Image (cartoon, rainbow, N blue to C red; front, side, top):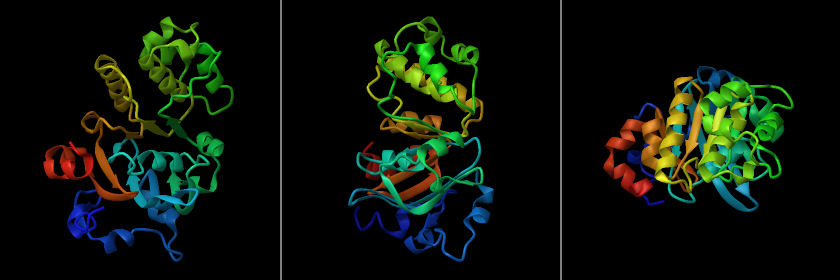
Length: 274
C-alpha cells in the first residue's frame, strides 16, 4: 500500500465520512469493552479480525458492521484479502483466525467451528461451487436439508431456478457453469441462513449467464437477505449492493455506499483498477 493510501484521506467510515488511521484502529474492541453490547446496533459485525495462512498475515485488522437486509460488495484487487475474509467469517480452518470477534445476530461466531457457524446462519457459496459428484441436482438439494435448520422448500427453489427444475434428475457436476452456480446458490437457500456469503458468483460465466445470475440475485435482494458479495466484476457487484467495503493488503481502506464508489473515478482507479 502506498503512503497516501495509509493516510487520512483514503479511509472512510460506513457513512462515507473520512477517518484517520488512529480513529479506525480505535473502533476495534479492547479488554474493557463489551463487544456484544457494542454490536447490538448491527446485525453482523466484525471487530479487529486478523487471520493467517501459516505464517502469511492475510487479514490485517478488518472491522465493519452490516445492517439486516443490506447487501455489501467486498472489493479489492487480486490478493487484497477478500476471499480470505469470507472464509474467516465462515469459520473455515484456513485462514486461521488468531485475533478478533465475529458476531451474527448477537451470537459469537469467532468461538465456533465451520459447521457450528453454518448451523447458526452462515451460508457460504464458494468460488469453486463444490457440487457433489455422483448426486443429481435434487439429491444435492436434499442433502443440504438432511439436518436442521431447513430453509426454502424444493418447490420454492425450483420456482426461483426453473432450469434446475428441468434438470432435477441430472447429475450436478454435468451441468453448465452457470447452472452449477445456480445449484450452489440454491443449495445454500435450502438451509435457513441469516448471512449469505458469495465468492465470485460471476467467475468464468458468459455475459448472458451473468445477467441471469444477476436477475436471481436481484430477486434474493428483494427478499431482504443480508449478503456479502466478493466479485472481481466490481461494477456489477456495485450495482447490486447497497454498500461497498474495499480492502487493500488485508486492510479496510474504504467503507461507504456503493454509489460513492461508482461516482469516484479516482478511488476506483487506485484500489480496483477500473
